[in-house]
Image (cartoon, rainbow, N blue to C red; front, side, top):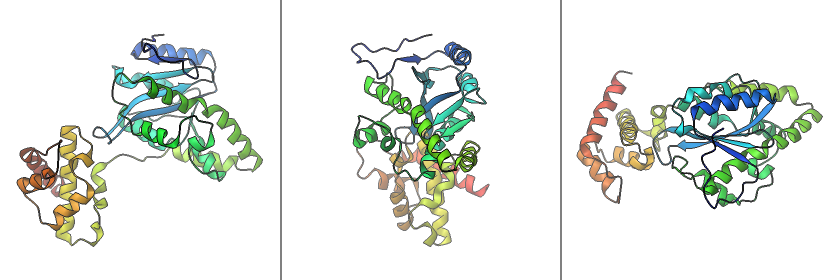
Length: 304
């Protein structure tokens, strides 16, 4: 199996790992897992959620079989549909912690619906355990370090060794934790309830629709009808502009700035661009392009 990614001077990982960048290696990985008759695989996903680029993207998928980690560089694949045998109706259970956001990213970014899954966060909440995976498993990094990696740009290449180590550490503790939580659920007679809640996570139809969130403009419900319509137009235009420029929506205009533009009656592309560009040092708004987005936003609203 192709293991081309091995930075010089990289300190050894907690566990051995394979870095996969080629489509043909996905079939080999599936055959390897199948021949080993694995009942379960720990899994986690790293990606982008409107922080460094526009939209939701899957960058890296991590597996751990109990002995070795497998990191799949999704950005390097030519056909991400080849991931389907590993993720969809797989012959093993995919053991996740707090799967909902990852499932949404995979469904939106890759068009796949992973199954069967085992979401340990569901069990953790049912058992009254506070905190996330960091609080439930022994980890060396601090909470601030964890936050830094969560906000890191996972779309960059090559990924530095520290980010690879973090990605691997996210899956190595899942299988022992699954055993521990399963024992507690059984002792407390909660297995049936857990199975129902876990299935609900797997079958959730939650989708990502940034245009539906225009009511998040501060004080939207208190606006008059004219103000609500303008807030909606500005929200749509922001999303359209962000997508065209591949920018996080908040880098185009914050929710607070959208509300201020409504309050000040800013409607024209030039007035909006002047307002948004006043204190900027980068990502300057192009008035002509934003004007096109405004008109497209109006058409979208008029057409329902």
